[in-house]
Image 1 (cartoon, rainbow, N blue to C red):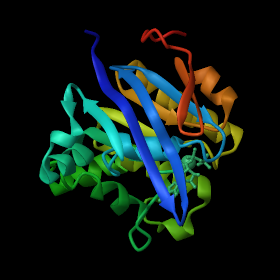
Image 2 (image 1 turned 180 degrees about the vertical axis):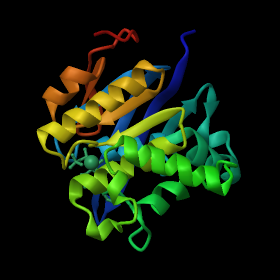
Image 3 (image 1 turned 120 degrees about the vertical axis):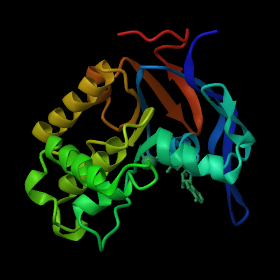
Amino acid sequence: MSDSIIRTEQLSRWFRRGPQEVRAVDGVDMRVEEGEFLAIIGASGSGKSTLLNLLAGLDTPTSGRIEFRGTSLDSLSRRELASYRALRIGMMFQSFNLIHHRSALENVELALYFNDCPVRERRSRAAAMLERLGLADRTAHRPGDLSGGEQQRVALARALAKNPAILLADEPTGNLDRRNADQIMSLLSDLNARGLTIVMVTHDVETAGRNARRIVRMHYGRVVADSGASGEARR
Ligand SMILES: Nc1ncnc2c1ncn2[C@@H]1O[C@H](COP(=O)(O)OP(=O)(O)OP(=O)(O)O)[C@@H](O)[C@H]1O
Ligand SMILES: [Mg+2]
């Protein structure tokens, strides 16, 4: 067996809206290998964010399964699932989900709350990650006083500070100009080179092509193309 970090089996998430049923994720069989840098692309509404939320354990499948390092998420207790989310998963949301009445530093620090990390170390790790993302002079700002791109980088700092097993990033460069986008992508490539597994959702095929080693395309909730379909990561 290969060493997949995540494996899904006929994973589906359907939403009912009135009489209509939206098959946001529809029978996805996917493996993410340890150390991989995978990009998920696809039109708006194709199910990319829904899939990422499922992988993060933030949403429950309508049917099908997700395994993380061989353990099925549906076999976890609520407490175990909470700890999976808090310790293993670094999630960067498309809409950031920052806490508005907290500073950038506090937003990042809060991600370390469940990490058994002493308060002082939480603060220094949070500050170091913000600095790495070019936000050293924005730590005291609240999200509302930051630009879209800055908020995006705070969200990324929050996802990375806990040193997760896998980073799930939803449009990590969506609000950035080319220079900042390139900076973020080179940071992600660097982290991936050091062993971090990354699943990144992006609209930007060029960004995906230049950085990810494997590209999966979604269409109406299904995986319709996978550059690593053999299960092998390729460049
Ligand atoms: N909570 C929900 N209730 C009802 N429908 C939903 C819900 N969440 C998502 N959907 C629907 O599921 C489909 C997939 O949505 P999703 O957000 O996963 O798309 P996406 O690929 O991330 O799109 P985008 O590129 O615009 O972010 C869409 O048609 C959306 O309207
Ligand atoms: Mg989305």
